[in-house]
Length: 196
Image (cartoon, rainbow, N blue to C red):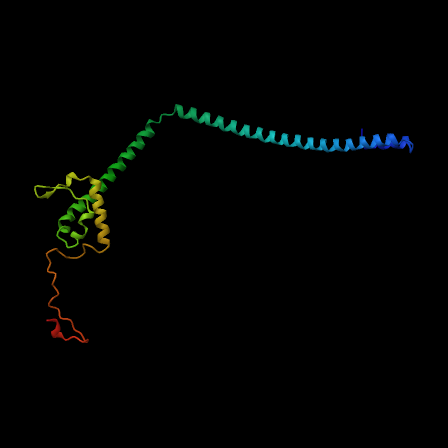
């Protein structure tokens, strides 16, 4: 029953029907509540339909991705990967060999410099920081050290040289009083004869 139908019933009954009027007001109130509930139900249905549509689209996308993945997997199953693996193994082996040669070269450079370093005055200050092999028959046995350890020695030496160590001729047995004969000149309270 609509609001228009209720209005028509009121007009037809006239003013005498107070009981009927009370019933019509109750019906009208129930009808208003029903309209609100109906609007809520419509909104809920609309929302559910939108969610359902979104889910359907997402399912279609996922099904498409699944099919693409299956096709790629089938392609890879039939592909011979051995050539690619062999190429990568060859590249890795070449890199490892080049790296080993680089490390050996650094190590050889350190060993070549060692004979000069051991007689330098700065050697005693830094000797403990280097990895040195044991002596055999009065000589260091470099073969007993790992190539990487010798290369680390070369890196450490470069670091010390960068700090100014091992620069110039400064052998251990150099006369510490080399500059003893140089007489200072002073205009201060001292005389040249005070330094003799």
